[in-house]
Image (cartoon, rainbow, N blue to C red; front, side, top):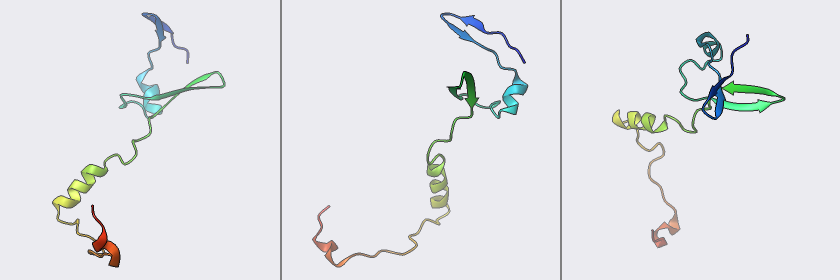
Length: 84
């Protein structure tokens, strides 16, 4: 498939057809990763942020009251000497 490279101000741009974006899994993405490898421009889905969604999942667990310590409280003999 050939597409036009258009002038956009001082830059260049292309319009990617929706079916092409759908095949790449980018149809619902607001951003994409872009790299150049061996003369090819490659777009890919951005990686999920590390620990994405963990805060919401932890809040849901806490809301259900299921966030009790698994092993209970325990300390070491020298803990009484520590100042925090």
